[in-house]
Length: 149
Length: 143
Image (cartoon, rainbow over all chains, first blue to last red):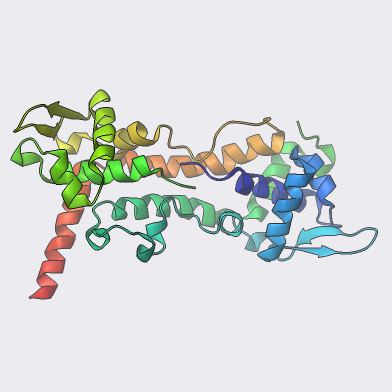
C-alpha cells in the first residue's frame, strides 16, 4: 500500500520551502538542490501544487515559489490530495459508484477499507507544515546550519 | 496509494469464507458466485492463503476450503501481509537525505503505526460481527 513517490517528494519540497522560504521566494532549482530531487521532477511537482493552490509564484529576478497560505493551514493530507487526487487506499471509500461489482451494495470488505482509510487520514490531516517545520528546525539547530545529508 | 486487486479480492473472499465457516468446506465456485469474483483468480489467491497457513484445502467433490483456525484468531494484519506483503505506505528507496529521514520518522512511520494498530486489533470475527449487525439493522428498517 504505497503512497506515490510524487506526493512524498511534494511534502519534502514544501517542508524545505517552509523552512528556507519564509523571507523570500525560492526557485525550483534551490528546492531541488535542497531535497536531492531532480529539477525536472520538482518542476512537475510544483506545477501541480500551484494548480491546486498550495503555492504561488512571484516573477522577477528574486522570484520563485512561496506558500500561498500560512504553514499552519497546510496539512500533509492536503498535500497528498493535491498530488494524488485522493488519500484512500481503495476507490470505493470515497464513492461506492466507482466500484463495478454487482455485489457492491452488499460488499463485505468495504468497511475494512473505510477504517484503514480513516487511520491514514487521521494522521495525515492532523499534521501541518508548521508543526513539521518547527520540529525540523528544533532537530537541526536552525535553517542556517543545514546541509541536505 | 492503492491496495492491489489481490488484496481487495482476497480479503473479500476470505470474509465470505469466514461467514460460511461453520458449514464445513466451502467451494471456490460458491465464493466466486456470491462475491462476483473470477474462479481462476480465486484459485491463485487461495493457493497463496493455503501456503501461508490461513486456510486448509481439501480436494474432491465435497472439497473446498475452511479457515485453518477460529476467525477470532486471525487478524486483518495476518491476512493483508499475506495478500499485500508489507503494508507500509512507503518504500525505503532513494537516498536517505536529512529531510527524507525526518519525514519518514515523523510522518510516514506515524501513518504506518496508526494503520497497523487497526489491522492488528481487528480480527476476522470482528469483521463478521460488524456485517451481521449491519444486516440486522437493515432487516429491521425494512419491517
